[in-house]
Length: 238
Image (cartoon, rainbow, N blue to C red; front, top):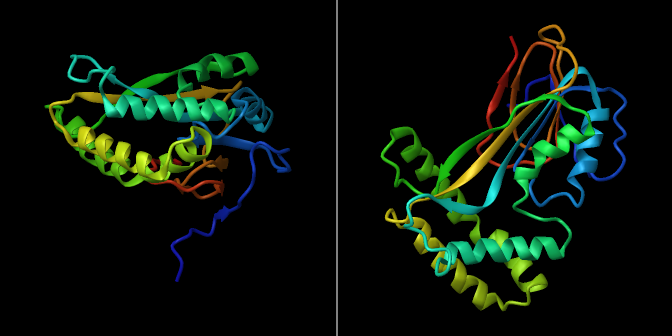
């Protein structure tokens, strides 16, 4: 028994190499790929050239480092801020910089996309917000970040920045404690940009390239999945 729909296929590929798909896409979706590419503009060009007229390119990515509007997070003493600044520095030394999602809008306009729209959402560090929706989002966001701290950190800190493993584990423990503190009102910006290219097509005729785990429903949709992460949204074809 399989849960994979018959109109969905999976492929593993390196998006920085030459794109070899022979069928143009109607929708290209990218989520949480910050730090994955050495040249985001080249990827945007490939997306532009790989779309049918009327195709859409949507990017969803986090903006680092963390934000705070009320002074409850001190950037000079915060372990969370120190951790993110080190991640950003390590990624830049590798030539795959984190923390540059705020440049995407200018990049996609430069390569030729039209009707570019960018929206920014708040991802709270924990359940500190009073708003029920943001409080729930913060609960899940805390679980997400806590579970990945060491996995995200160890390679960059030890191989690039020269830290010892024990030093990284110690910093991650301090970061985890701060993330759990409801008195610290931090949040990340999640930048979402649906980008329209030329004109729209008829309904129910999508060919999609998705760079993460995404649920796709539709009677004539074909999807290529390239990277799997959690917390994916869904696209529903009408």
